[in-house]
Amino acid sequence: MLSKRIIPCLDVLDGKVVKGVNFVNLKEIGDPVDHGKWYSEQGADELVYLDITATHEKRKLLAELVKKVAEKINIPFTVGGGVNQLQDADALLSAGADKISVNSAVLLNPSLIDQIAKSFGSQFLVVAIDAKKVDGRWIVYRNGGRITTDHELFEWASEVWMRGAGEILFTSMDHDGVKEGYACKELAMLSETLPIPVIASGGAGAPEHFLEAFTEGKADAALAASVFHYNEISITGLKDYLKNHNVPVRL
Image (tube, rainbow, N blue to C red; front, side, top):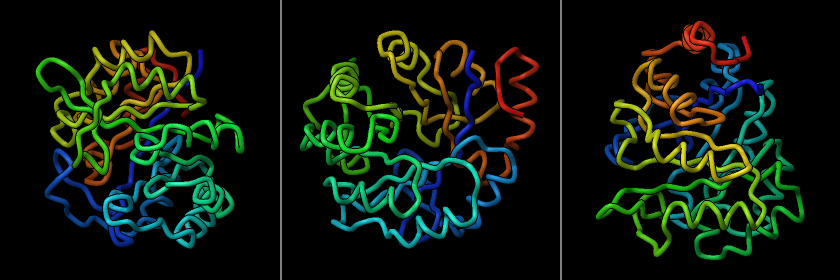
């Protein structure tokens, strides 16, 4: 069985790491390069950097930041935010990112998934899906959770897989930053119906929540931010806990 991955997420705004609740009320936390280096040393399996306003404010991620991160850390990292065309993906991968994450751009232009997968390979492409439960249905949002779409979570997840996505990063907007656990039922449905890895995001508040994401949710990886940023959970301690509960992790 493949090891389950623990992935700290660093939301970046104006070159600084920030964190909020339900996608709002953002607070500055620190430097993205220093944070990445620290997480690498603490035993994180991967990192995700998301420029959370790049699409909304019509800005691009700075390739220089990616270069600096690549120089300082020795674990894989994914970069997303403002990837609107093939050239954006090329710039980030060339700067040192191991994978790129796309979200809003592919909701507006789904064929971009096909283009990136064909040009660079599915293994380099993570499609992030932000969804919220509305009247009993999980509706997909874009632009950092600001704009609703006509897509439903499971329909859209199936389409992005068929178009060539290598992984799906599912964030429950209802659970994000609340620290009451992941959306395990929905994670399990995604994991059971898709042949590609599913990353859980939104809701981590205790080691038990990671365990639930891997057992009940059947996720391949679990992403979190504030519990790691504020040292509420140590990565080393979390991995020891998971190992003691028979979850395969890299120590």
